Image (cartoon, rainbow, N blue to C red):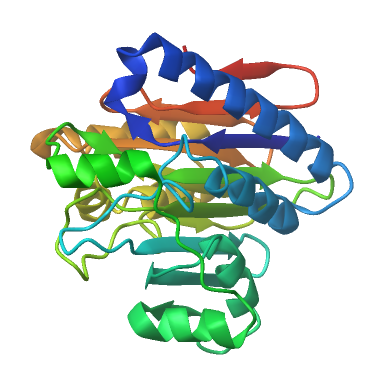
Amino acid sequence: MSKIIIHGGFFSESSTNIKTKIAKQNALLRIIKDSYEYLRTHNALQTVIYAVTLLEDDELFNAGIGSQIQSDGKIRMSAALMDGSSLKMSGVINIEEVKNPIQVAEVLMNEEDRIVGGSGATKYARKHGFKQFSTEIPQRKAEFEAKLKATRIGTVGCVALDAEGKIAVATSTGGKGFEIPGRISDSATVAGNYANEFCGVSLTGVGEDIVSGAVATKIVTRVTDGFSLQEAFEKTFSELKPFDGFAGAIAIDKDGTIFHQDSHPTMVFASFDGEKEEVFS
């Protein structure tokens, strides 16, 4: 019954640059298959951490290595983790110089104060053995210096359903680039990352739109209240239309139904259930 779906952001370049598109397809297929194998011997919570770590470690995606640079020249990242069984959520907001923000969120799951931001998040990471690591790559530096204005909206995420029927979700982002320092994205909020025993959802897109639409929470709540996963998506995404909300979401429900939808194609995603694989085209 184990199922898994991941996303690698919402990049406009993927539909125009064939080399980038193929590279992302190949990377997502590699990561989804690797993560599914991991899921066979681990639970959903462990697996979403594992999958998002792999995504953070691939510079094709805007999280961890390859994160966007903010307007003051610094990189600040956010990530969150949620266990659908215990309903515990943890996360870091605007953490700096950490290779894998999702792993810091994992450690925070054991704390009473589970969502930490800014310098406090960075200090917490150092205290718990996360070494200083620059996630800046030459491509991002060149983009920053050239003040590129192209739309580059990216996040990574994973939703997993394990063999015991438990659901977990993890989401990580390197920001949108050139934002005001201190801006908070949706990724470490319940609008962008949410799960319970019925459903798990991870978002990518424009954080402000996702928060305005409370997207992940609405989808999970509607599934909990009896909507099918598709119906929950359709209703929630219809509520983004009045303000042209820019969002993409991946999800799995307790019955193993995998679903994804975006409001402005193309979201970069892949899914695998042990037999059937799907990747964005």
